[in-house]
Amino acid sequence: MRRERVVETLGLTVRFGGVTALDSVNFSLAENELRCLIGPNGAGKSTFFKCLTGMLKPTEGEVHIEGENCTGFDPHAIARLGVGIKTQVPSVMNGLTVRENVWLGARRSNRSRKADRITAETLERLAIADLGSSLVDTLAHGQRQLVELGIVLAGDPWLILLDEPAAGLTAEEVELMVSIIQDMNANAALVIVEHDMHFIRMIADTVTVFHQGRVLLEADVETVLNDEKVRDVYLGKRT
Ligand SMILES: Nc1ncnc2c1ncn2[C@@H]1O[C@H](COP(=O)(O)OP(=O)(O)OP(=O)(O)O)[C@@H](O)[C@H]1O
Ligand SMILES: [Mg+2]
Image 1 (cartoon, helix red, strand yellow):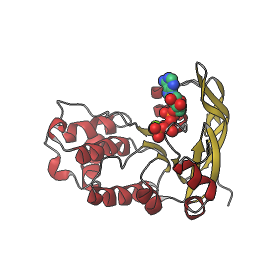
Image 2: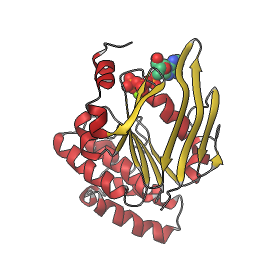
Image 3: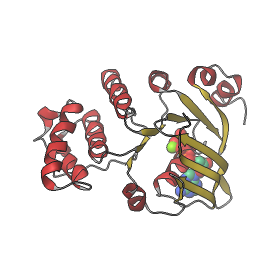
Image 4: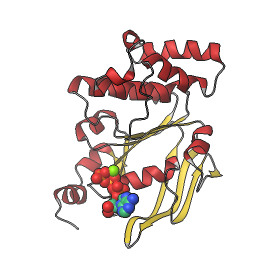
């Protein structure tokens, strides 16, 4: 069966003054694929991610989602396509409880009664039901990360974009994050920017390696982690 390509970028280029952060990137993601983006600091991962989420307009090139040219769409317009986005900057609402935060995620695309049900299911799924009445302000970092995932999940997205979901998590929380991501992948395609190689090994299928704004290599996780060029750019031997 031929899988639909749900995300494509064509010649995606971003320049900041004299700096070319992204240089003619052609990228393609299939339906229900789970793709990790890795690369050394400054490689262009976040810049690429922000072009997909609509946080950044490319200098040149195009972003297509489900065949529609979405170049220059703002984040709300991207979200309306059924895309769930978790950025590095926390997007939970302080002053509200965990349950209220997740409910707002569910309410975006559902009536109130259904949002109640989805909220309860989502809290169960993330094993944070006991935190439902806690103000998000009072949570530890790892718990807040879970709430953010809950907000994303409650919107029932078919495409999920996650920026460093494992950052700052304890080993135990990382394990939980892995199982949640695998569960999410049953119903959605994912693009995940991540630094933690241990985490990537646990979840990744195909990995795209960025270096100096270009795609250095795209292959299965073991090939990537054993590749000499990839090792060199991480160790800084090749500039
Ligand atoms: N808003 C900006 N203004 C100017 N230069 C920028 C801006 N954002 C990114 N850059 C530059 O673009 C290049 C790519 O940055 P980007 O943040 O995409 O890298 P990254 O792969 O996400 O790195 P890291 O792993 O450190 O998060 C870097 O040289 C960076 O300094
Ligand atoms: Mg980054």
